[in-house]
Image (tube, rainbow, N blue to C red):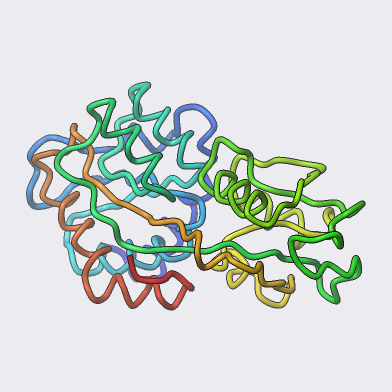
Length: 259
């Protein structure tokens, strides 16, 4: 095993792989019954990138012979990839409904385990130049970016908007919450709706505007070992690392709530 710095560089490089179509990392997945070590491919919601990179580094340091490859993207797209044959070992989704798709398709071994929650917030560029105050009339005419309806953050956004009686008119709908975050942080948008964890990840580059009622519509994140890795010791130990005390501490540091 290389140094912790080398581990981190490898994981960060893996995390940058786009998951549009089959990820190049997917071919490294181990599956089978290798209980001691080997390659492990984890597909995870984009909002988990910071926390899972840190957890994976911890696992690699404590598990000689285990090499973890991380691919992040929109949860529904990840399920589509697995259903299409991408050989991932572990799946972590940003909501229960998306994981249910994987379960119903026979892709999951055993019961998914809820491990975290997340809530939505508005973000603006520093100084909030458009004067956004919430899910209200301040968004009229603003360049608003949201998640597409087919991904968990998009579904939660729609639910919050309906509860507030607000019709959103976004200029762009993104397939991953990190893309929403990026457009606001770069100044391409006046406002975006993202998870609190995403706002924290770019603190200093965006400002948060709380959404009234957001805590009542939390996204529950489940994780599961996939069927092809049912006998994989490393896959199950990664799941245990995420759901155990050390994993919960990392998730909390990144802004996630308990399940």
